[in-house]
Image 1 (tube, rainbow, N blue to C red):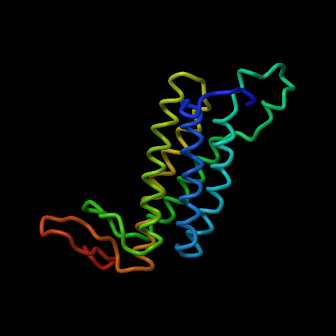
Image 2: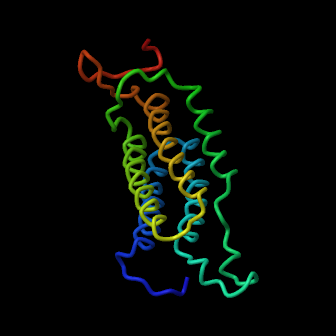
Length: 180
C-alpha cells in the first residue's frame, strides 16, 4: 500500500498469517490426494488475493482511477465455491458423531495444521478489522475455509487412510465409512 507500518501492526499480522496459511497449504498439498491437491491449489490463488487486499490500504487511493483500487477482491462467489466443495466432500463421508483427533494420513495431518493456521488468520483479520475497514467477504472466506480444511482432512483419512481417529465414550478409536 506504500504506507509504512511496524512489523507487528495488525495489518502485517493479518496478511502475514495469511501468507503462513498459503505456505502451510503448500505442504498439505504435496501430501494429499490429487483431488484435494487440486482444490488446495485454487484456494492458494484466492488467498494471494486475500493477502493483497489486506496489505493494501484503500483509504490511500487518490482518485477512483487509482491502481490501488484495481486489485482483485474476494467476492461472494469465492465463498460459495468453498461451500460447494465442502458439500460435495461431506456427501462422501460418514456422519460425524464424535470429536476428531487431528492426524491420520500425512495429508490429513497437514490439513489439520493448515486449519489451525487458518483459524489464527481469521482472528488476526478480525483484530485488524477493528481498526481498519476491510472487505467483509474476506472474513467469510477465511471462516468457511477453516471449515473446509476440516472436511478435507476427514476426506483424506476416510478415502486414503483408515478413517478418522475419534474420541468416544469407549476412548480413542478409528471411525471408517462402515461405522454406524
